[in-house]
Image 1 (spheres, chains in turn brown, yellow):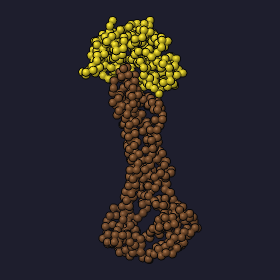
Image 2 (image 1 turned 135 degrees about the horizontal axis):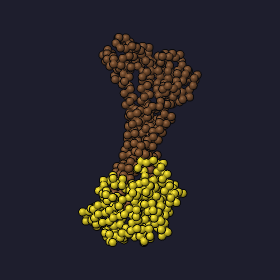
Image 3 (image 1 turned 180 degrees about the vertical axis):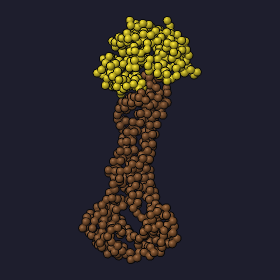
Image 4 (image 1 turned 135 degrees about the vertical axis):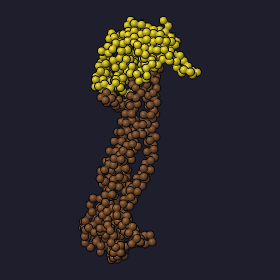
Length: 377
Length: 231
């Protein structure tokens, strides 16, 4: 065992000396290779972080949202539906929600206006998300004037800025009182945007949704799991777009790396002959070339992956923000929580390190089985 | 030699070697050689280009196999050994000096000398030390860290000799060792060879250089022509 390790250490030592002979070429290869890993790993890490953030946010949201549908479109739902749905086994709480969108032509951005249930906001006051505060230059005590649905301008005093925990959802948010919301959008008393139901036991969700559809045929229940799936699909789709955009670059690299790794120069063939003549076995030569491929691909993988980690978790994936987050104007300052998915890491490793290492070994196999007396001729 | 088992006699029995056998360009480089090489002596295979010296040397050194006939080391048949054992024999019994020296460019003299010891799996530090000592023995201690392409012809050859000796072989094989050297360096080479014989090493050389085969240190000269021994 000790002998085997020493032998490997010696081969590795020779490999490193051998690689150092062509510093420019190998460094260039390492950088291009590392860049590809960096791009792929950045997309994977960032999409995964977004998914996990969405899951975290949705974990606190209600299990069922009930929307009224008129002619296939979402419509306001009367408060009376809370009574009409009757008592449903498994539902522990239910209430109406008021929320809507407002397009602010001043900054050409959409805001989400919401009446919170867990906090009281005085009439004439608002709480704004960090993205709006940044875009409109608002701070506590400032006034924000918006034109309501009746055409009159209404001024709201900023009581607070929403800071942080998940700017991804709160960036474009304005919280206001129920009276202000109804007056601003012209929503009459007794109507809500939608209803939400809390169900403790997840196995009862489907049954509850089924009962709701039967009792309130003009409504559409939306389960939290469905929203999660939609998020997954959207992020997966965005990830796919980036991969397609990167495909050209990746393909170019694959061709370049394959050519570099699989083509043996006359000099390299001569060297293999010398090594065999001085007592190296075919397997020693192959091992040495394996180490050569492994050193380059592993270094590139580590370099690229660490750079991607820093890019995603320390600069919030500055390069990919526009395409992966999908916000129109109010880019949230999204600081994803550092997180590495083992399976994803293994997949990336398999598709980057493994093919290159293999590409270095195959041609060596052919060259290393030639007769050592070539060097004598 | 350094506690290693003593070299045994090398016997060649009706050794023949063909290249491209069965093809229109078939060529018989060795046409039936019987030879006995005594251990601890310097033997020179001499002859013009194409006489089969190098082919014979490469078969004795386990770099290739004869097409027919047998090569024995003591009572062991070298010519019938499987590839792996041939490599083992090449690594432990023989040390090679090639005509073009065949040092690996870009590597230092020290790295080149260490190369044959690498697959043995011995202590790396001890191997490095031994390589340094060998370079020192041939006056190259200051050139250990130099890349081999920066070495002069004589330095490159002495590096090649150090490489041939790193695994403490019992037999040194050198193919046209003075072909790329001037007379002064050729004489210096023969002095080194004489020193190795003093230590009990068997030395096999090929050459058509009179400075080699006429050197007083040479014990035996085997003349070859058209793949046969002619004397």
